Length: 221
Image (cartoon, rainbow, N blue to C red; front, side, top):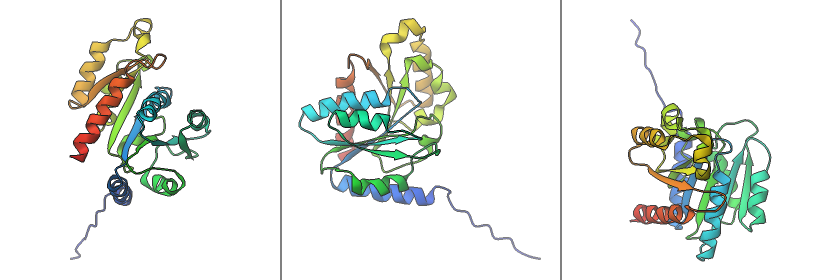
């Protein structure tokens, strides 16, 4: 009678190993890395732009990796602000992975003690499944997307340390049910902070940056 031997291997094992090496390398240099997640048009680039202005005004340095299926529209917008940004076009892949980040880091000026923002592909599903060397994940949701997103996509909220709610100036116009949204967020991710942002005026960006600085200090400690 034969004996069946089953060999199991985690499907993300290679990615996770690369991500661990990236994280250890960046952390050793004091680089704080934020993986910015969210659907198309949620306001990810607007958030990064608002934070970049404040980070640079404080004297800190930052770099950005932009992920898109196609086009470098967001990367060019960031470069116009004087931000060192590098474009990854996946050509169809719905997420960034650690191998992509590993390949582009040598081409980017990431100063010791600086900030690195990685804007992931516009998608509320696949990007949450992959670690890419980040210190934390930040999920961005626009009021225009509706209040049901934490209920429909709980995994991405559960994996995120905070949720940035953008386009808050449209709450009344969109009939946004904030209590419903907050209840869904609390169920999907009890630990996640909820951070509102008005992308037009920048209101809320100071609080988001303060939260990120506190998170950086907690992780370093």
